[in-house]
Image 1 (cartoon, rainbow, N blue to C red):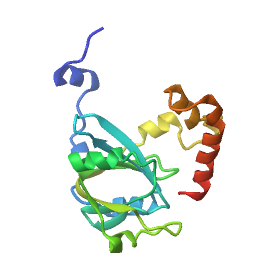
Image 2: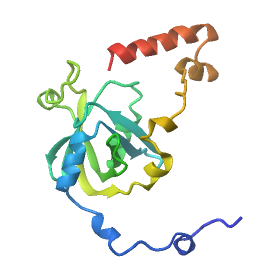
Image 3: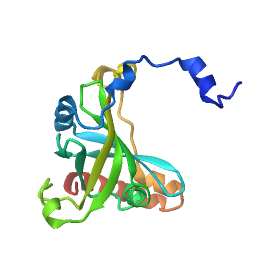
Image 4: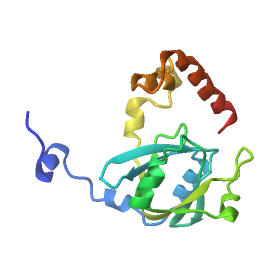
Length: 203
């Protein structure tokens, strides 16, 4: 088994991109990117912690919840979560971020790269009220690069075709916590019921 250790080896396997591909990269949002963001209810946010460990976190709200401040700046409301704040702590230590936006039924995705900062401003947070609650804070992203990613991964996965989905995966946070010694087996059912309740009342 040959380990790939350099770009030359990698390029022999993958090949070179066409000359046109580099021209799909933009420093500012195009009209199509703006339209895409207005219809996107979900994106994945990639950050890196102080030790260099990357992580990806999903962020979602009604379509268009990410506000375009200008052609090179996004404003993203932060909502209630598990309070671990891994992503937000990462931004404080390393502002470089990457985002992938998704629109249901659209196989192309929008990729954005830039630098983020966290804003604590009551007036700004009250511009992002959903379900009767303002944003906890706002993440501002200054765009350094944005482009559309081709549809091949979504076509291969058939992600948007319900007939391929199969049964839903059952996830028990109680069982996950208990497996690490953080909960007794007798507590699992009540914990999971509480999680489902918060899904209904505490978004």
